[in-house]
Image 1 (cartoon, rainbow, N blue to C red):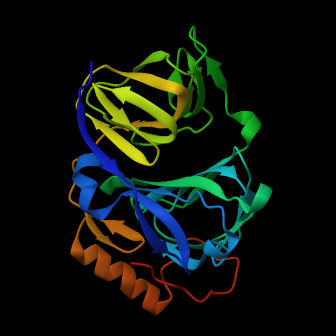
Image 2 (cartoon, rainbow, N blue to C red):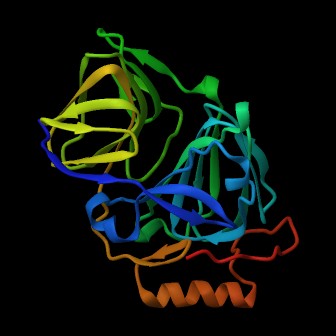
Amino acid sequence: MRKLKKILTAKPVLEGAGVHLHRVFGYHETPLFDPFLMLDDFRNDEPENYLAGFPWHPHRGIETITYMLEGSAEHGDSIGNRGTIRPGEVQWMTAGSGIIHQEMPKPGRGGKMYGFQLWANLPATHKMIDPRYQDIKAEEIPEVKTANDTLIRIISGDYDGVKGPVKDIIINPQFWDVRILGDRNIELPTRKGHSCFIYAFGGEAEIDSQIIVNRQVALFEDGESIIVKAGKAGFRMLFVSGKPLNEPISWRGPIVMNSREEIIRAFQDLKDNTFIKTEKKNPDPEVHIYY
């Protein structure tokens, strides 16, 4: 059984062109969450706090995982991809050698725009692979109901023999949306040697004799499973695990590499207009660098 290692509370930050969100963990916590780099909670009820969105910006060396609950996000990039991420859907973007894209949130019911973005690192051997997308529709994500009526949406990885639709990810991640009924316990299996955490976004729960509430992340020690006991009102969480890379990290803004020299090269590529290594299908946009 995994013991609780650390609890962190998400902090409000301003990102993009003026988007109000909560940062769960990021740059300073990277060694703890390896292979994951950052988790943002962008649940928001006020359109004026998010409509400015995330205009054209670059990524290299990472994967970004966007999971929408309410509202939507229109996206496009410099190699011709266009689309909209709608409620219940996931976009797993592998930036690889480089991509320039934008994400523009749109309100849903009552002006709400709810969701999360998780950044996962790529190993040195795969940082310069060709970019790709796995766009997952809501109906493609299987849902398992356990014996105690816990509902588990399996985005990647597997539970009780049921596999999620996201495939061929180097860090072998488990990424689930878990809903536990009030006063129920659930024991979830974890891969020994993998980093594992849960993020609370509904109700409260007891884990290892400590209470976890909305907008808190619970990071675990190593082991083969975790136990979560929901409070009276029930509990909803993201369950995330992945294989640590144990590699050096050099991180500047939206680009994460293994050395300072690679970071310098990436920003020189942006300056020289050689950042995109695959075929361009759109004119070069005005790029914004967010730190």
